[in-house]
Length: 77
Image 1 (tube, rainbow, N blue to C red):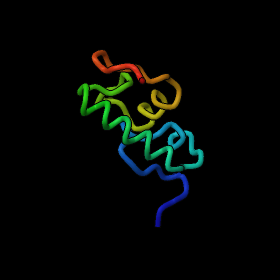
Image 2 (cartoon, rainbow, N blue to C red):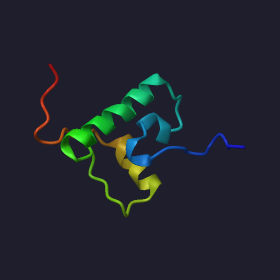
Image 3 (cartoon, rainbow, N blue to C red):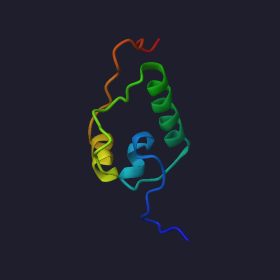
Image 4 (cartoon, rainbow, N blue to C red):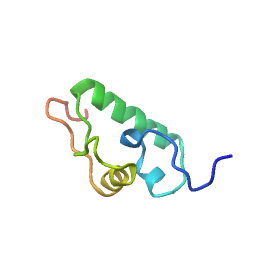
């Protein structure tokens, strides 16, 4: 049985509301898909995180910092 306070997912792709323990919705899934597309397109994530960070540290970066568009990605049209 999973506790209500347990985070489940891959921290680098989790939506900010997940880390903030807010309501999860389809927008959270869209967030994750967008991060995957960014990663596939540019081989970069939109935050400065590294593999040595704990999931809690990654969550702080994602929840509190604005994402940065990697260079080479087009602006929204």
